[in-house]
Image (cartoon, rainbow, N blue to C red):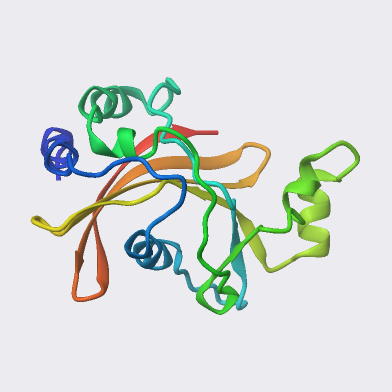
Length: 184
């Protein structure tokens, strides 16, 4: 799928979901979708560590080149409005589904002074496959599209962030396309 078509799809989803208002927590439907977005399978039975606070989709990062600039111009709608401010997640951790939400701050403490960083993280948690941040998903019931911003980090200079378009139907989430916003 070419960049123009992908950008048009993202624009369509963002424009068609104008009824969502910002809230201070995720709705039940948003949590249901987030469990599908975060679900992963690791051969060692591991998990990704998810920030307990949603990320604001940073389309101003300057990363990602031309695709990110096009996405920024298009993402002037509901996804940005719904994610205007971070909110605390309320879904439970599910390591058996490949994600653990860092509610107690154990993993974020690795990056405080004297915490040991990524080296200590992996020494003490060899099956913790890096960290993940997500935005609140924006779902359009008419089209069945979901837009989410997601970032992953597995080392000091090993991370990526995307805006992802999914199709949501019958309790299943299928990725349509993702556009890279940043890379480290």
